[in-house]
Amino acid sequence: MRKLAITTLCAFSLSFVAMAQEENGPTLTFSGSADTYFRTNLNSTNDASNGGMLAPGTSFANGSGFSLGMFNLITSFSTDKVGFVADIVAGPRGVEAVFGSPAPLNMVNQLYAYWNVTDRLTLTLGNFNTFLGYEVISPAANFNYSTSYMFSYGPFSHSGLKADIDLGGGFTAMAALLNATDFTDFNPANEYYGGVQVGYSNDIGGVWLNGLFTDGFWQADITTGWDVSDLLYLGLNSTIASDNFTGVAGYAQVAATDNLAFGFRGEYFLDQGVGVLNQDESVIDLTLSANYSIAGLTFIPEFRVDLYSEEDFVLTDASTDSRANSLSSFVLAAVYAF
Image (tube, rainbow, N blue to C red):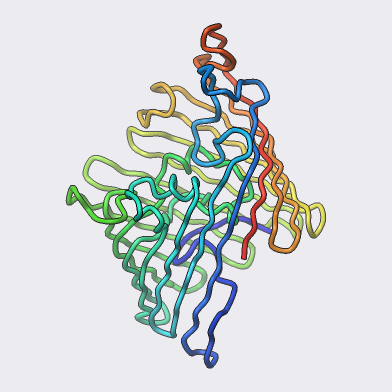
């Protein structure tokens, strides 16, 4: 039942086999998702013309009323040795995820080729979603529909060359040379980042230590998640980005039936210069979500409260200067994965 999604070659598994030859022959697969949602504030205006705060300062799921997410289609071709992945997106969530690319390049979420040099070494070249953090761009791979602050202000995607190494015994490592974060089409400033990851996983979960660094900047991240039992899953993500932010989030998911599960995210986020809040201001995000699944379709009703350390957000009408340090909201999302 766990929803932890760590991206190494792809955000989630490729499911529909369109062409397969022999067992180890070339394989072409397609997968993807489509999502839409309704969102409303419970203690604030939903009218932007009044100057109210329409949504938390996190990515995606921040439109009012009935809103669109995204459609994405992932095409993958693989043989024993080589392959490629092309992930095409459309819709507001997709455009926001690929914000560093101008149209029409903002349709490309991932595009990379890989070579299985040996059974233990894979080289990947191109544009791929980030290896840092707990949450991912595709809502089909997240339990909560709204996203965390750490995910929203960390990297979304990278372009570069990376080497994934199987160390044996469940241990893995990764090293990468990358463009500046979210510059996925080219490298205009001729600036490069280093990326590293060390991980351990087994049948019930895993833990990953991640790093991203360049001259004058670094980010360190730890992500872990475990199936405590057949019914209970627990996850944790903590990260610090120099002169940007520090955060920690805990995740818990409980299976009620084969079709229904409940999940909670509790996050603490401190703004140390990234600019989503005031300098040294913090926010606590408390999110309770349910997942009800019917075949490939999942309905996600979600209640979220953001508790800010300062009363500096307009909640009702700007002319009344009504301010508070909390924002509560409700979301109902539908996510279809294929």
